[in-house]
Length: 424
Ligand code: DOR
Ligand code: ZN
Image (cartoon, rainbow, N blue to C red):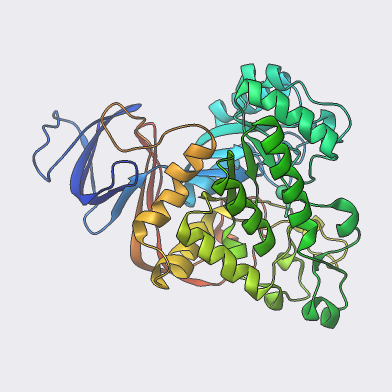
């Protein structure tokens, strides 16, 4: 058993905010109570959380673990260790592996590897189309039986409105969220960053915000047509957020996530360095302002890292030739504390919601600190000063634009099924 003593428990589901002890017995939370009042049997391990926040286990609903097929960039073992370091107790891995996770045998392979080598829970996302090629619908029901929690062709959008409708119809009957990488591929063709003064100055081809928002508009209308649960991945543009806000006001089952890099950086921050290259690209100042407003007013449901490791041999090349994507796990909480909480834009409770109950709801799950619930907890400091040094990351890759950045606040212990899987 594990007793977590004297921590400030923040539980968005029950709106609990107070100093409590929490007792864990293997898989489950046994009890919570006032400090010093719980009866723990002899031999119980004790974690002193004085001065720290005790939150439900953080869930990252958008990550790339690269296994199977691209193990020189990441594996389930190294990726989940980096996730644990970042305070995440569960991660949803996107299907753009080699082979693509478009059938039950790949899903089972991922879950088997995670059981053997994973530090945190791994919940796979299945492809929407065979090979994510956008032609034929994938074997979604078979993957659901094997354990997928959502469907996406991430890396690309679902190719056409016709296929998106078919996928949504199918996922509605299976009660799975369709997680869309919203992009008009023709509008984006050849672009490597957001179109604007900075792209011109750097001599890089840019894509407009509409690249994302026209696809969001298409999908919102198809969500209305089909009644499906639509989730917009890594939403970056003000116009996209307005679509989501409109959809929610109509009572549609539409949700969205925002990444720490999109609420922290803008296109003006892009340097001629592929660590600033990701898709969707860093957006305009007014987009970032809109995302911050959406994070505060509830339009945004979740913070997701889009952890996208690429080994140096692939990433340390000319901007145009480098793949899209940056590391995300270990800087997510620090950036959220700095940009959202320290800045006074949202409360600590709302930030915890964006890492826990928010993403859980997207997946149709619950997350709370209560007896009988899974013993997954994230314990973090809002005060501890530290510097992110990517060379010390458990990830196999090094592609972070935040290398060397100073932070205030960090995960101190990540607990999965009653076990401390990472501790600072
Ligand atoms: O930046 C990105 N990286 N965006 C994506 O959509 C795919 C991802 C990856 O797989 O590297
Ligand atoms: Zn994507």
